[in-house]
Length: 207
Image (cartoon, rainbow, N blue to C red; front, side, top):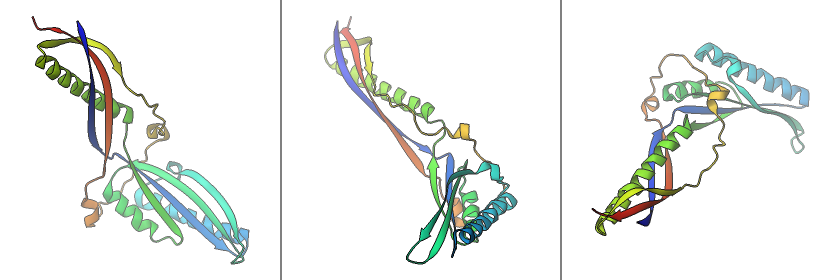
């Protein structure tokens, strides 16, 4: 009985399922108190608009940071609050969100599309990589008049899943009329997961 070592690889693209939106709201003033008052007014405007137009309650948002800084060269202060929310990936809803944000002064945003249940998706790709290794092993063994009987050892570099579990955080559900904009008809972005496994198979001569 002999052994054969084979590397299997696989990759698969998954359509984004979650959308994280990060908002930065700023207020300015000649004093810290006026800057804070200006910024808080805009924060309230943003949250109330989201609740009224898209049924996104303030509890669905998470505070990321809150700060006031002094602008020495301009003799003024800047208040900055960053908040974020995770919703189901929906480009029609994204168009509505960005339209609403554009109505609030000194407010910027960024988006990050994510996958849901990543460990399960990784397991699927790992299985594909193992199947690739087995296919290669069968082909190589057959060329030498042998056959694969079983697996002796599998080596896989496991990476601990450290990305935030969005399901534990909670995914907000937005509601509202579908956006008529053409941009809402685009396809959602995809993310690729690739994996490799090294497998040692046991082989023996064909009967």
